[in-house]
Image 1 (cartoon, rainbow, N blue to C red):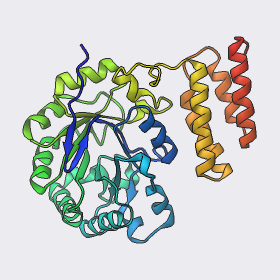
Image 2: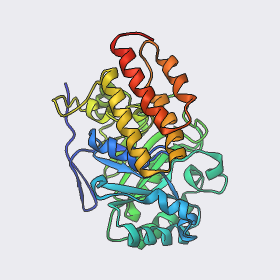
Image 3: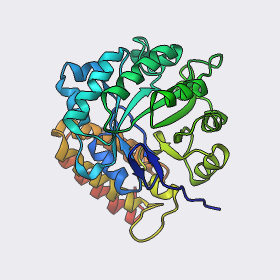
Length: 333
């Protein structure tokens, strides 16, 4: 019983296909976003970007935000702990790049971010969360501001519903909820009941996030929570086609369950895009990271993953992909 999502209105944006690629540090760069857009993602997000880095015009930070027209609709996600800095950085981002959405990160559980009071640490201080959000909403009136948050700091302080109601009052256009606590990091199960609770408490769109890996999970999350969209994070690693497969879009055009030959082709294309976007060394290192996810779950997968880990230059990657293709075609390892 596959129920299609109805298009979702986020501010002035009409999201026809409310399947979102989550911002992931070191993963959701330009090549990966393009692949996910082509394979069914309705909206993609950049890696999260430091508001302080934007204000200082740090080149590395500015590089993380660059995108191309064919990635739209795209959101840029900011994190920071000082309202005026996050507000000013949002204005700078809008003036420079005109993204479709500015998203505020209240979800990152990494200590490096939270010990300064940014990311999910804001959930410990809802007044600070209000102030940061207010500053951003006032700074960019032209496009929707959204937030991505966790359930709370720990099990004793589940604040997502209260925080969501406050965010809506301030003028946030949509909320993504990853219903784990900061303390849980990425372990344990996420508590989908909190998504339903938030959905019942606010009128703006609520996007569910956490533990959706299959179309069964996807349909279950929609049915149990009534969420308006679903955001996919780690389940897209090595599987950019997951967006198609969740919607069961099967036709010649849509890859939903690729065989290993198709996966080799997708990973080759991904690598070509990496080489066009980065310098040689970096593209090889990033390819290794992605290939670790692509090449799983078939006979001999670990043998090939080990081979890729030893590679030092781009030519070797192309020849190993070719070798792998031939070997798998004749089932020799």
